[in-house]
Length: 140
Image (cartoon, rainbow, N blue to C red; front, side, top):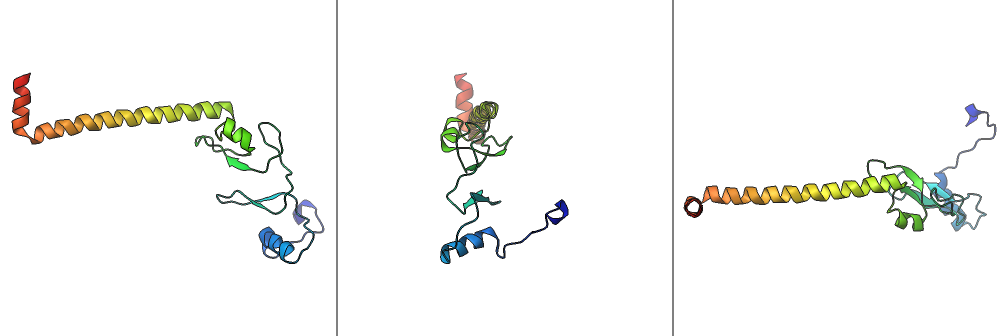
């Protein structure tokens, strides 16, 4: 910060999370606005009840950080609960369409693998049982 020209730069001992604990324990005025972003599955830790960000899709106040549920995209963005439900956690319609297409493709591939496995299992059984193989050959 100092190399960007700021003169009065301070660091909180213990970080923002410790600051939140101190203001609660000592009943101090909270000077932090909003959510503190964290780099784990929580994505945010509430320091105040104030919402200072907006949903990137509808513009409504929201503090929910979301990773796009389309794993090929995985964009980190802010999404309200209504848009999360409407767009199934995706950042755009294209990401949602792509995500749905991938899910359908994975289901089709899984079905094909199961059919192949089933036919392979039947062939294996036939090969392992010579008497069954001869009976099947006589029927054809």
